[in-house]
Length: 213
Image (cartoon, rainbow, N blue to C red; front, side):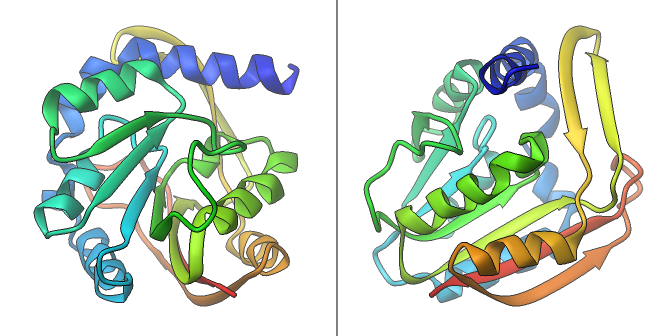
């Protein structure tokens, strides 16, 4: 599948499940203590007054959690349906429709970036471009916090919560992602893994904290 057709398929799939996703997962951070701790770490290291970007924000619940803690947040997602769902729920978050490979943001606009489970929808060859874009929109010494599923498999879904979808979930090797980030101009400061929580899909999770050099 050509890259543009692949991204269109991801976009349509998330448009289809946007309302259901927002309803089911709006409070998921309440059951993820490690995620909250890492987000708090990100907040503490963000330059005062600088905005935080939530890439692949979905309906914006992570950006909203950060906003509740006093951050100025911008949620960016490929899916117009997700953006609409977020705007209806979280007036405190600015939402923008956009692609990880061509972010709708100015150079150095953000003090930090969070990207939870969004690079898993990129084809391997697109990862360097996505990391270069993340670096472009970060201020010098800005922080990037990534999470993704660990491994080498691709899980394809044709159905999600009773809706027809056509989307791949690509598991990734942490050492490879760290290497790509270093090549894109980041210094990796933390890499850790955890087992899934009882309510999550069965997969090992990786978290990576990197600083723009």
